[in-house]
Image (cartoon, rainbow over all chains, first blue to last red; front, side, top):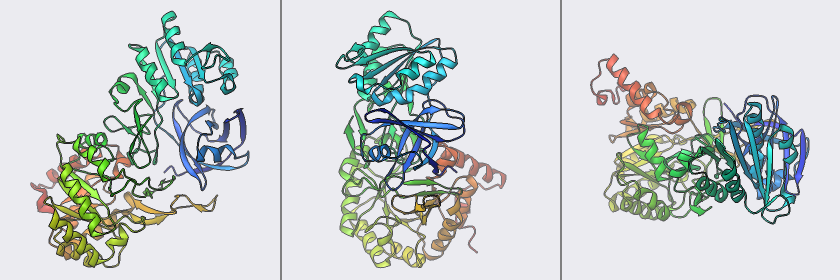
Length: 259
Length: 279
């Protein structure tokens, strides 16, 4: 049984003008890349990857983009949310040198994976890809944990001017990485998949979810692979077989819409 | 599962002998807001709200399954016989091998159970659909009625080729910390292990009332569960929530367990057991 358990938000942090982190008590093991179903009472329930993983405290970091995340954004310390999970598979952290590419709010779920990789003595490099410097968050957190950091901004307001995928291409031509792990806009991840060719690749996908436990089929990709169960992290081999990856997703009714 | 071609293919690869599609209506429906599901100690509570892309768009998914090694049972829901007929014709033209008429969804206004609790409507819809299509039709009934035998008879009189029972059972979960129902729709349908004895009773009761085959549904998780339904009078069983308890290859596991039981009890043909519990 894993019904939503009601948790008080014990700390909120405003990371940027539209990104916040909430911490809540939630004991138990979680692999970086796994997600929770977060219930905003009377509004909605949405999947959200863990952005902070400690023994008893877990956290989520999100951008306000719609009705549910707007309502969540307005909650304060002491307010209650429902939490169930963790669900899904998480990243596989192995090799000598990993390049992490976080695009936009995707940076949030990359963070615990980077910290875990560093703990495992894996040399870790992070690209934070955003539109402009006001959208950067977790930069200090990555520095503190000992990862090497690059920043790309579309407008050049900080770091590399251009897309995270272009910066990745440059880095890959100069250094050898044993794998590339990413989370961000699907178009970016699709570009990365193509750039990485034979380098082992993992990407965390996002799909509209209803049950989160592998029953409803709402989030299926390819031949019945459930983002909530066999995902959300898929490797390059699988992604190449998903004709919908980077092309379309399904809305609440199950209709195909462009990514 | 069973909302798209890929997932139906996978379910068949996992040992299912046939697939029932998501229930499809004339127009696309997003269904209810989340939470649409609650995991409970003895079962799963859901109120999806009949989400589906609409029959026209769904056709594409079925057409992709031409070479599937198992029959496809197209599930449809409508609010009148006219709607059911239109949906049935389309499902058949896309290649569905049989139809399941959903007259039992417990939480969708104007559909499902609101139709399936009226014997006259059940008979009318069943016979109208039967007259206009060639593939076999099964009528899916609910346990949430007082006159189940009468309703099953109505489906038989409407010339249904079989009856499917049961759908989920009306239920609710309240979160006592927040003092509100968890489901956005408040009321949902209960499935899984907890409802098996109710499903078995319903199949038994239906078998006493009709001569057409019955497909048993509700909490089938093991081969033993399936055998119980068969002894109550079912000729086949459906599995949904069982995937939650035993992963997608629950279909293979259940078949293997039935085989083992039959060997142990020297039963050669499963058909010998159909309705065995009726004296």
